[in-house]
Image (tube, rainbow, N blue to C red):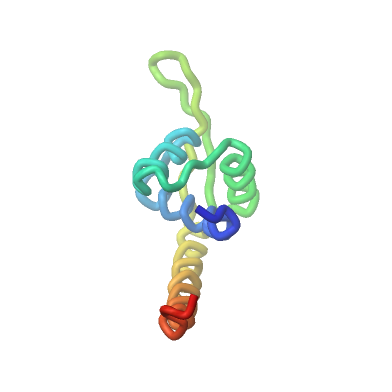
Length: 111
């Protein structure tokens, strides 16, 4: 997998996952790994800086929750602004995919 291609999709995928339900960091990483059949494996060094940026931008909100085991986890949820950003990012993603596919279809078999 070309990680350069993946970098631009991280915030889109995080917002999409959080539109399903609130999640903590490890849960986000394991969900994306599971849902992509292992194609995407996010490391802490890429996931958490993106979570912090999305939070600083007001697109997600985080809150610490303590479980019955006494373990604390920071759960993230998408905000109203985050839902608007997700809608915009989904539109951009659709346009990008369509444009790339048009080029690839016209070049099919030329590689």
